Length: 114
Image (cartoon, rainbow, N blue to C red; front, side, top):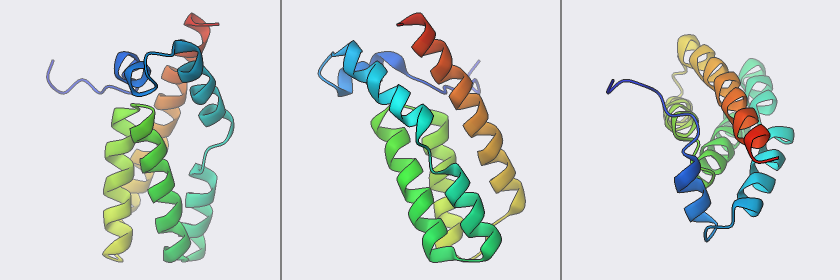
């Protein structure tokens, strides 16, 4: 299944924090409670592409640092579209769905390591 989406690569994420599972879980919990998706959507609706690009960049960076692979990929796509000043509403919707799926996967990791 080559097209299966990976929302959380827990093994890679733990490696990124020097194999400190407790720290990784803490960072995931922080991400869970402090995300920038609302900011991104608000700025896009307001037409403020500069702030929207900043929010997309933050999501992309956090997702990358935490090994939230699908979210990182989709945040990169929306950031690229914002830079080009050509945002596809379908891409925004896809990102919103991906974010929800990512949070569900994060919740599973948090529950497993509680």
